[in-house]
Length: 124
Image (tube, rainbow, N blue to C red; front, side, top):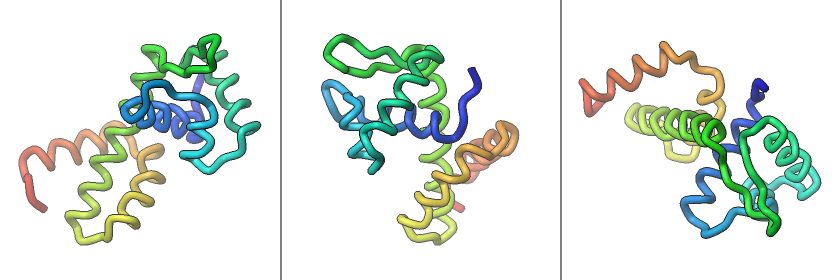
């Protein structure tokens, strides 16, 4: 199953929430993303069918190995793109908003070059 941007965003949100909460539920995702419960419920069903998440009998959501891989990749892109934009002088809110858009579309090649540049040039 190929993921769209929205699926990646849900997985990233589950990863972020799982670092803050003991158990992630659909309501937590809905509140964090400011989405309706029915929208999140539908997305969770699609992600579960795709093998990206598991939901236990109490409604607790966990990422599968493939879901975690996608979430970590997107979250890493978000953090690094935000960082480089802020180093370039972009305010934090704009940098994180723009990084959120860019993280889904930047090629692996371009992102690897950005990561390498940050390693060799710790300050922009």
